[in-house]
Image 1: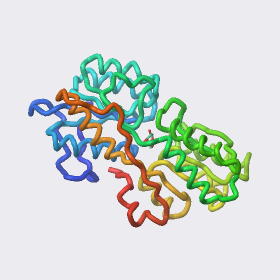
Image 2: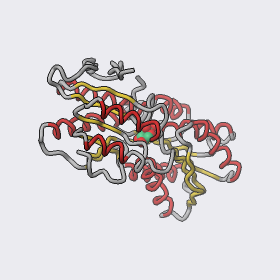
Image 3: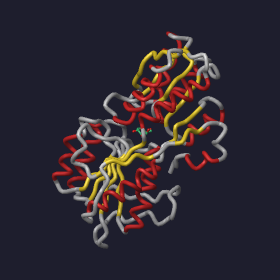
Length: 315
Ligand code: T6T
């Protein structure tokens, strides 16, 4: 059926509902296509988008595929293009597979803003907005380094090759590992965004290399599964887990001590910046080709204080 714009309890302002009909009030129609539905990172981004759109009198429709998978995301984009919005904010699920469907949107005159992830060739888009993913990966290694001054083996649990964000995080992490001779990477493995697969990867890796001291989990679902895997292996406390993202479950894991640090992105800012860039383009104003948003390292020490605001919304 038609994508309804949800009113999210977690969004500020309360006036962010918009109307799914759009257009009739003269406001711009914005479509948001998430990397995957139900992911707290994209839910928080949706809040940022809706809040900013409400300020501009624009309406937002949000949709996401059931899995982080270009074969599921493409038909959503095709349907969005057919519905003729003024702008499309999208997190492409693959740097190459999503190139053609997004080019079709651009060819149809829709202003495209790439939020979070990007494409191999982003030149048709108005703007690309994302975290410093490589820097975040390097920061994740630093957290493992601090907790393990004697060094040791480390593992990366990523999502799938071809995702710009998680690939950059893994690269930033691996490059930093290569600069410290006390550490050795046992490599990057791919969980396909399934926590159960991430857990299996971790239990198998710990069986093969029982001396692994640190695991970098490159997104929410990798972190969820990695924590489970370490617990199943009975290695809790012996292995440092650093996860990207800060959903409510990850924060609980941090507080419980099953995860040692989180790299919290700023999804709502990515979303609001995305709306600003789209509207600037629609008004014929100047736009920024690339915007990098910040991140915060959350630990047990700051999560109840300054780090509290960095936690993602779940609805
Ligand atoms: O880490 C985020 C996002 O930045 C990445 O592109 C995909 O995974 C998340 O949505 C978290 O699950």
